[in-house]
Image 1 (cartoon, rainbow, N blue to C red):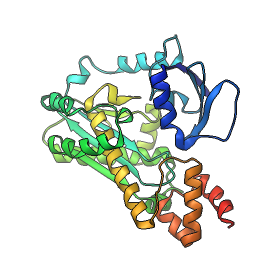
Image 2 (spheres, rainbow, N blue to C red):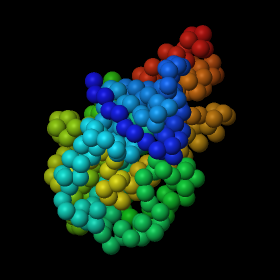
Image 3 (cartoon, rainbow, N blue to C red):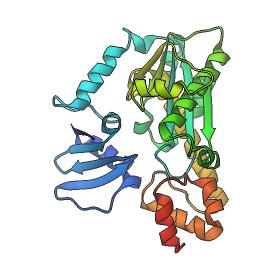
Image 4 (cartoon, helix red, strand yellow):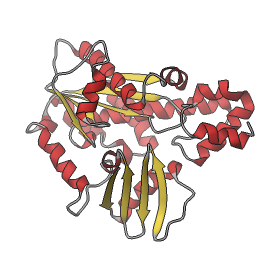
Length: 308
């Protein structure tokens, strides 16, 4: 298990606190502002401004936030990541891919690949394309259609129903590898005969692990691949893909909320347990399977709340 500690400013702490609201644990620890758990990583925020990440993918989760000021693993990893990319990578014509929804009980898993050639990078900057985590939901939804007008893209959505069907055979990593590979392949076909100068995947698993699962796919994109955490900081193609993913995810939750007649939250916290229990009382497991990823621990919690 990895442990990463990073030091953040009060403004950054506020962003981290808001982000993990749906993952909070009912746990009180001295000198902490909150303890949360997301995708197997425990996040502990201390009143001193330090945030500790513990778990198998702690480096990946910590990498979403500011680099540490000290000589820590997180900052070392970030430095190593930039060293893997060619010079002037941010100015090259690149396909970038990202995903959203993997850590949320409700809603689909969405992957998007975007081709941002060097000629349109300044246009993306002028639009305000940046890391989706520092944009509001409103800004994301306003930006998405503008991005779609200026870059080729490929969105893939796995509904909760489909997710539940394939999840026993596909663990979370294998599923994401398959989707990233498929989205990139379809986008390459769209822009052919144009070829990107590189393909940057927002890293969610070590490269060796990605390539291991990639071998299970029939059509494999294997060349010119780069893997970096916080990929949106290294090329606007990933930032644009992140925004398109998030906009689609928000739209999916809004549709689910309209269908059910009450708000469906993101994340996998206690709010999700309560809403899942309400769905169970309304239509049982068949109805819940239309909106939620059933293998999450939230399902059992919801069944207890619903008295089932």
